[in-house]
Length: 304
Image 1 (cartoon, rainbow, N blue to C red):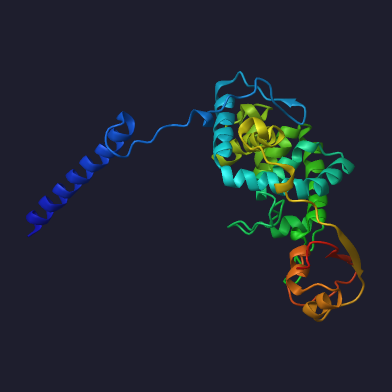
Image 2 (cartoon, rainbow, N blue to C red):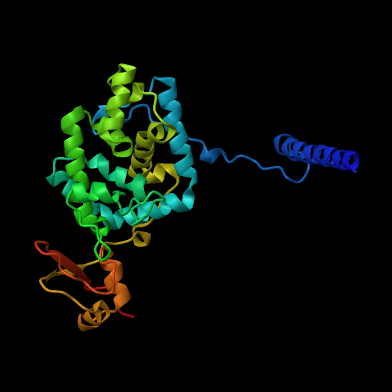
């Protein structure tokens, strides 16, 4: 019985191997029905010169060039995802850019938010949340409130301010914006430890985990693609981009026991209220002593 079973398995594996080999062979030779041609339009010609926050990318180093090529190729061919990011950027960059400028943070860091969250209030498997993907304890360290009912990681303005505080602190430590960007993924301590142990001073000379090794190149790729979208096949007319939504800001000075009723009193519904104020995580709002909140109410685009 065992011998028969072994022979059956051996024959099955052999047949499977032949089928798999045949599929691969037909793809590469053009024989059979599984042939897939390669669209040459999807090949990437990298720019000769690139920089991050004015710091030159050493494109003559082979692994640097190939790591950038990888991220460019991936994101150019993620058509739907990259298209949606470009659409969202038209709405959210006007909010993010002035906050970066006010805090003395280079404009290129808006692309860090892009690779962290695709400009959505995403939640990672580790529990990081919002555009800037703060973990709970880090958020609190940078004065973001995180409770069961309020989570300011979902407030784009406040989270961007908090990110700026981190970036300024990291720049005071490293004096180099590229290392600052890498530290957003790896942590300041992790980057410093790698610099010390490897005896180098530049991000592009570090041997890092794959995630951090790719991190800055993902930022560079999105900067290049979004800054030259037509060149890379993303010719989006203005009327398909997501426009900023006009809102009025209502300061909150007392508890709101029923947010659904509050929404109706403002001439909107609960859904619209939550979409524009995702930092409110409960059905009511309790004011934390010493804190202030502003509720955004849209003035357009919510009526049938």
